[in-house]
Image (cartoon, rainbow, N blue to C red; front, side):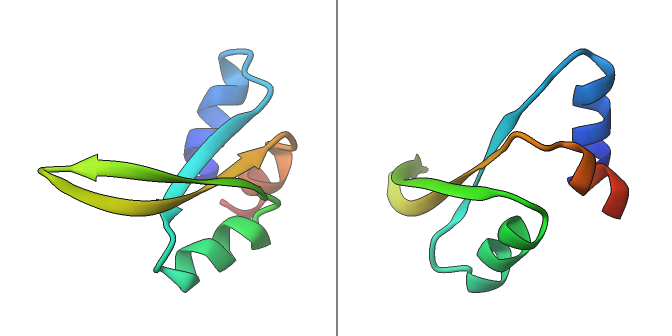
Length: 68
């Protein structure tokens, strides 16, 4: 994710959002540790299956870049 954040910064990006499966507590913890702020739950439909998703917003892209 840090590499993606760095590339986005290089293109002039200021912020981005990331969705992870809500059931993946590890993935959610990583987003939080990287500076993401939980904003909402959504449902992602994949091959006919509804998957609960947690959306995290990053407005300080320097932190994930620093940790990459």
